[in-house]
Amino acid sequence: MDYSLSPLPGQSDFGVVVTGFKPEMLDDESVRKQLYDLWIDKGLVVFRETDGLETQLKLSEVFGECEVHPLLLESDWPHEDKVSVKIDEEAGGIYEVDGETRAGWLAWHKDSIYTDKLNHGGILWSITVPEQGGETGFLDQISAYEALPKDLQERIEGLNVIYQYTRDSTEGRFGDQPDRRVRLSAFQEDSNKASSTLQRVIHPMVYEQEHTGRKVINVSPWFADGIEGMENKEGDALLREVIAHLMKPQRRYYHKYVPGEMVLWDNWRILHCATGTPMGMKRLMRRTTIFGDYALGRKEVVEAVA
Ligand SMILES: [Fe+2]
Image 1 (cartoon, protein in one colour):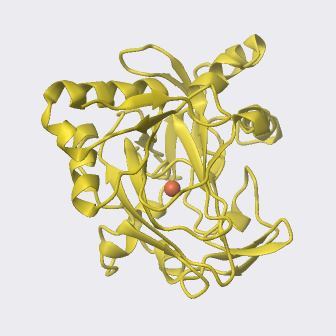
Image 2: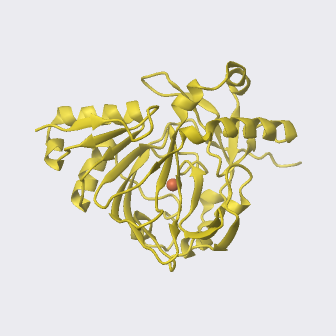
């Protein structure tokens, strides 16, 4: 009994597809270690023909403990509401993008970058897949760093990026934006009440992946608010230059789901986005979030004026 590996369709810089995976393989400690190392090495792992809640939980445990979304910790929302990602017209989160109205569109981001703790990743299990749209975009920030011109590598070394929660990407300062907001979801409406959204946080713009020493462009376009100590025209221009390099079209991989597969990503070095689902169609995913803290984030200290 064995699984096989193949590259992501059309993307050779990162990611891997696992075929022939069976949940009982996880009883073997050496398989668990292989899968963990694969996740760290490739950043994105697609498990074809992998289905079911029990399997998702068992698989998640290979990579770490599951955590509750930080915006749910102090809210009245049932935790289940963020574990199941139900996207349709009724759920809201509707934007006009490229002249089309779509539900559940999300800009490119890292989860929880607006808090000082960056979770280590997640697993999305596709249950209902719309006939059109509903893709998740993924982008690797290690190969993006390696392709960065030397002078830009030098200019960003040692800099830090400030993040501020924005529930609506039409209000974000950096990155792609939708043409127009139609209606926020009830969760989005409520989300800026959590205390974790009120304080700005700071993360290094570049850091080294533990164990491999590979450098990561640690920038999330959505939620970025500026460069620490350079919140001016020059700093914003530099951040825009880095984001433009990062977001080059050839780096963007869009995963087109089939029902009954699981996609695992490493939030410490992979950006993701949601392309949204056309009106009248339904998308249902279930996600787990893998706890972790790379311990490089910190809250902004605002000095009181005397
Ligand atoms: Fe996300």
